[in-house]
Image (cartoon, rainbow, N blue to C red; front, side):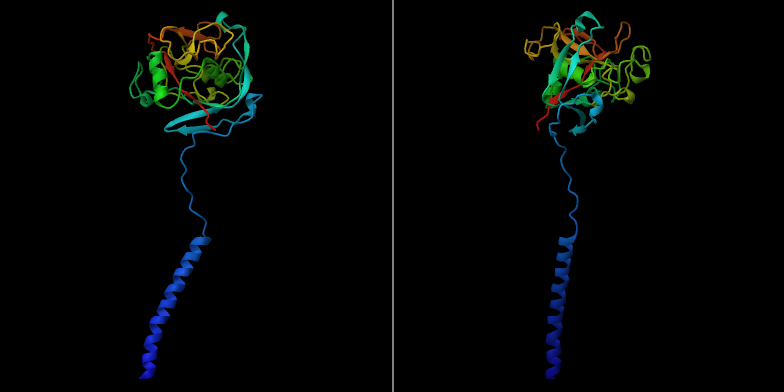
Length: 276
């Protein structure tokens, strides 16, 4: 009888020991197992790269800011303008960037803007906008319009190419009046025409507003042409859809338009400073 009582007392104790042992095993296994991967928020900056001497030395870096892909433009120098181009593309002058910046990989679309322009379709570039409307959209997104120099450097790079892909016009690399009369296309439809940083449609599709007031070269960001509040002086638009003149679809050509005018062939893309 006494032995039976002892057996009943041992059984609960054994169960407790087994339970504790089991829990310790689980805890030890958890500590030994590799940690589950953690989702990270999309970064809003990147380490500042060293200046780039040639386009081929740079591998495009694309990041999403919200739902918008942007390409990082590294520091470097290039020759802005084209001595063989129109009079307002001369003289060429060297422009250097000490800090990287970001530029939209594509033109802002109808879907991103929230309404359609002349051409319907979610992924078509949004055009037919006043300069201030483009400026304000970028500002609301935590970005800005690129300067004329920033836009051209992102299109041409340290090699100072005439077109984003090289120095020869290749019709299949862009959407313009020789292959798509009076029509734009969905953004990014010509991947072979990408620039050295991975930006698409910098030649062809719609022209693009930049921040700069139209002024003579050489470009000087400190001479007043980057005033954000001047709503009277003509502003520059870049990125040809036309071929009726020499270099008409090049990344060097520049046109002007009153900020109070709209045109179906003028859209835009945004830029932003790198915050690293």
